[in-house]
Amino acid sequence: MSEIDRFLEQPVSWLRATGPESDVVISSRLRMARNLAAYPFLTRLAPEQRDAIIQEVGEAVKTSRFLKTAYFIPSTALPELDRQFLLERHLVSRELFLEEGKNAVAITPDEMVSLMVIEEDHLRLQVFQSGLNLAETWRIADEIDSELEKELDYAFDGTLGYLTACPTNVGSGIRASCMLHLPSLVLTKQVHKVLQALSKLNLAVRGLYGEGTQASGNFFQFSNQITLGQPEEEIISNLEGVIRQVITHEREAREYLKKKRKSKMEDQIWRSLAVLKAARVMSSSEATQLLSLVQVGIDVGVLGEQVNHTDLNQLFLLIQPAHLQKMTGKELSATERDARRATRIREYFSKVVL
Amino acid sequence: MICNICGTKDASIHLTEILNGQMAEVHICEACAEEKGTEFKTYFNFGDLLAGVPGLEKALGGGGKKVPLICKECGMNYVDFAKNGRLGCAGCYSSFQKPLATVIKQVQRSNEHVGKKPSRIPKETRSVHDLRQLQDKLRKSIQSEAFEEAARLRDEIQQALDKIKKKKRPEA
Image (tube, rainbow over all chains, first blue to last red; front, side):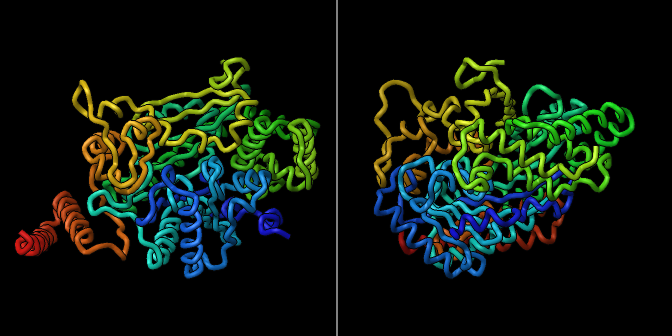
C-alpha cells in the first residue's frame, strides 16, 4: 500500500471538529515561507539545484523530531490523481505541481504538518489544527523551523527579515489563516457588512459561495495580509482577535434565526436533508450548499444527535473528485463522479430519519 | 452573471476577495471552476494580484529612457519582476532596493522585520536585527507607559549603538 493510500483510510485530524470554537471555526493553519541562502529563488533554479535542495532538505527533515517520521515524497512519484488527492486534503498547494521541475513534500503520518520543498519558496511549511488554535500552529511551526535551521542556512536580511520570492511574504514569512463557516451571517445578509468592516484591518478574506439558494456561500477563509513589521505572536493574536469577533456575530445571527425565523430555517434544513437522502446525481457545488445547511441544523439543534460536525466535515472531503476516485479505485468522468457522490451521500444519511 | 473566465456560461461560483481594503468579486462557471480546481483559495495568489498593482513599474522612478535594472547576482531584470511579482534571488532585494522599497511600502505595513531570526546568521545581520527588536520594544513600552522598562531599553539601545560604532571605526 502506498503512503498516500494510507491517508485514504484515516480521517483528517484537523477536520475532527474537536478544537476550540469548532461550531464556527473549522480549522486553523499556519504557513511559513523560507528560502535557502545558497540558491536562487524558484524562477532561477537550475534542475541540478533543485536536486540539491531536495537532497539537503531531505537530510534536515531526518533530524527534526517532528518530521523524522514524515513521508518524504518526490513529485515524480506522484500520479495526477494522487496530486489532486493531496490537494483536496490541503497537504500540498496547487503551485507545487504547476511547474514542470522536480519538487517534493514531506507529510507527517497524522497529516497535521506538511513541508513543501520548492514551491514558490524553497520551503513552505504548513501546520494544521482543528478549530481556532492559531497559537498552537505557530508553536509547532516555530519549533520545526528552529530544528531545520540548525541544518539549513536561510536567506535572511537584518532589516527585511526572511527573504521570500514574493515581497508580500517577506519579513516573518508567515501566513496564518482560519476557515470559518458562517451560515447564519449569510442567511441574515449580514456577512457583507462584517467583511467590509474587516477590510480596513489589513486582513484578507476569501469567500467561496454559490448562487441559487441563499445559504450556499458559507465558507470563508480569514488570513493576515501583512508579514513585515509585526512579530509573529502579534500577527497571530491580531487575527485571532478579529476572528473571535466574527464568531460572536455569527452566534448572534444564529440566535436571531432561531428566534425570529425558526420555521423558515427548519424548513430549509429538512428540505436539504431530503434532497441529500434522495438524489441520484449531485454536483459538488450543490452538495456543498446542502451540507452547509445540514451543519446549520446541527448548530441550531434541529437534528438532535442524528448528525455531528466531525462526520459531516469528513464527508465534505470524501465527496471531492479525487477522493471519490481513489475510493472507487479508478478514474471517473464528471458525470460518473456526480452519481458516485450522490450514492456516497445517500449512504451517509441513510440512518437519518426525516 | 456570466463567467469571468470563459465569458460564455453562467457563473455559479462567486468569490469575494478583499485586498488592500478593496473588495473584488470574481464569478466563475462550474466547468471553469473544475478546471481551475476545487481549492479556490490557491487560485488567486498574492503574487498575481501584486503583479496587477499599478505603479509597480513606475516604482522604478524617473520618466524617459531608463537603464534596465538588473540583479547582479542572478541576472534578473526588474521589468520581469514587475510582470510576475516574483524575485529571482535573495540578492534581488539589494539590487532592486529602491523600487522595491516603494512596492513593499504598498503591500506591507513597514519596511523592517521584527520577530524571529535564524540561529545561524552572520554577526552583523544579528546585531542589526537585535537593535531594531530593542527599538520596537522601546516604542511599545512607551505606548503602554511602562517608563522604567523604557529607560532600561533606551540604555540597552545606546550600548548596542556604541558597540556598532566601535566596530566600524577601526575599519574606517
